[in-house]
Structures are given as structure tokens and as C-alpha cells.
Image 1 (cartoon, rainbow, N blue to C red):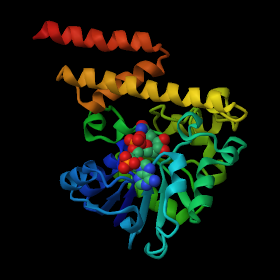
Image 2 (image 1 turned 120 degrees about the vertical axis):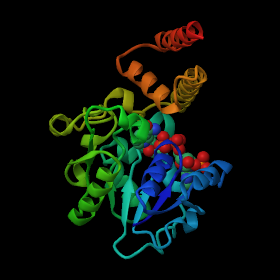
Image 3 (image 1 turned 90 degrees about the horizontal axis):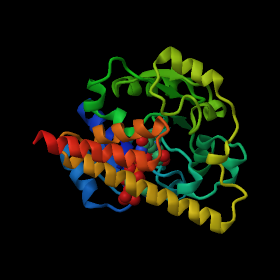
Amino acid sequence: MKIAIVGTGDVGGNLARIYTRKGHTVTIANSSNSPALHELAKETGATPATVQDVAQGAEVIILSIPENRILDLPKEFLNTIAPGAIVIDTCNYYFFRDGVIEAIEKGLPESRWVEQQIHHPVIKAFNATYWYNLTEEIQSGLSHRFALPISGDDAAAKAIVFQLAAEAGFDPVDAGGLDESWRQQPGSPAYCTDLGVEEMRRALSQATNERTPEFSGIGSSEKELKTAMEMNNEYMQSINKAIQVLVETKQWSVAAAAKGLYSQFKSGKNPGEVLAYVFEHKRLEGNNN
Ligand SMILES: NC(=O)c1ccc[n+]([C@@H]2O[C@H](COP(=O)([O-])OP(=O)(O)OC[C@H]3O[C@@H](n4cnc5c(N)ncnc54)[C@H](OP(=O)(O)O)[C@@H]3O)[C@@H](O)[C@H]2O)c1
């Protein structure tokens, strides 16, 4: 298939690796036309493009950028897609990264909001699994395939996305229509919890459509919002530094380090404990040399 990927970060970049490996014709774009885009193109055989041109003739368009950056996409970027083309939305909304999007906070499913911005239906997929689960390395160490929730209103389009999810190493699970897609949004039991099919179905059915305080920025003052965004930036920087420390031990790839760190956070450890974990690994590595 002709697949266009907008956003070549952790998620979009690894989807480009997967789908080129599977023999699809892949075109990629990011916002900065950075050297990293061209390196990824060289590595995978994907064709680099501008956002304006990336979707030309594409049968599947994957959006993998921060939610608020959807607003920056050029109005005409879907004008030249193939007839009946499918748009896959991998994006998630976090107010402390994206700023407050009021409609979403008031209950509009995130992917419905995306649809409204791009004026094209979307299928929500790949949003509810950590990026490192898209790597061959991590997948090869798993005892079973993880389930991937997929929601959307067009059954035929969904069937194709099911096929693409399976090609990417997941067991696709139907999470309902897009109005139900809150069941796979951040904070839900289905979100980034590495479940198998039956557990995933249970998690989707147990989800409740309420935005808990940690995912809700509405009503915050500008100052509070600014602080939340700064704290998130610092947090992401410290995670990235911690990943680098683990990578430098030479025992860890970036994907393995990210998986190790995220699983520590999932188990409720605080940043100090995570740092201790990182340096313990560094110390152990030092002892082994
Ligand atoms: N990380 C995860 O584990 C994960 C898992 C599932 C879903 N998600 C969601 O998937 C989306 C992407 O996540 P990520 O972790 O891959 O992000 P990321 O690593 O930060 O990469 C973001 C990518 O989006 C590009 N971008 C930003 N604005 C753009 C624009 N206006 N036009 C074109 N490209 C643009 C960036 O390119 P430039 O650098 O050139 O701007 C970069 O290539 C997010 O919504 C995220 O919440 C993330």
C-alpha cells in the first residue's frame, strides 16, 4: 500500500521502519525537514517529503504528532490522497504538553477533535501502546503479542487498519466506533497496559468516560498551566537523560532503556527511585567491566 506518515518521532519513525520492512511504499514528513528525517529515509527506504506533499496518492495516512500540532497541518494536505484513503490517528492529548483543548476536556473524544480539524474521518490506532512496543527488538522478547485497540466508524477502513496492526506485530481488538474511542485514551485501563486480547476486551468494557484531575487542565490559571508544561518538559528531559545513561552502559538499546524506565514508573516509583534504579544499573555495569 502507499502509506504516508506525518511525524517521524518515536511512533511515526518506528511505523516507517515496520511498513517499509513489510514492503509498503512509505513517504514520511515532519515539521522541520530535519537531518533526522533524511537519516530515517536512508535507513528505511522511505521517501522524505514536505507535509504539504507527503499524502499525495496515499491510501493510508498516519498522523503521529503532538495533538495540538494537528492545528498546524496545511489545510490542503489531504487534497491529493487516493480515493477512499484511510487516515489513522495515533495522537494523544495531554494538557501539560498540548495546552488546554477545551472541547476535548469537555468530553469530545480526542480523535473526533482531530477529524474536525482535518475534515476527514479517522481511525484511532497505535495510540495506546508505548512506542518501544513497535520495535522488533522488544517484540522479539515478548511471550505473546499485545492487543491493540482500534476504534472508528467505517468498518471497511477498520478492517484494513486491523491488517496493518497485525503486520506491525499486534492482535487488533475492535474498540467500537469513534464516539467510544475515549475507552482507549490516556488514563483508561486499556491505555499502555500491555494486555492480551481477552484482558484488552475487559479493560475496554471497564473504562469510564471521566477525565481525572491528572488529565484535566481546564480551569487552570495561565500560571498553573505554564508550570505544568515546564514540569512536563523537565520530566521528559530527565527521562531522556536517564535513557542516555542506560544506553551508555552499552547493555541497553534506547528501546530497552525506555521500556525499563517506563515500567519502573508504571509501578509507582518516584523520580528519585527511578534515578537510583538507573545508577544501580550503571554501577553494576561498571562492576562487570
Ligand atoms: N511516545 C509514545 O510511546 C506514544 C505512544 C502512542 C502514541 N503516542 C502519541 O503519538 C504522537 C506522536 O508521539 P511521539 O512519541 O512519536 O512524538 P515525538 O517523538 O515527539 O515526535 C513527534 C513528531 O511529530 C513531528 N511534528 C510535530 N509537529 C508537526 C507538524 N506540524 N507537522 C509535521 N510533523 C510534526 C515532529 O517533527 P519535528 O521535530 O520536525 O517537529 C516529530 O517527528 C503523540 O500525539 C503521542 O501522544 C506516543
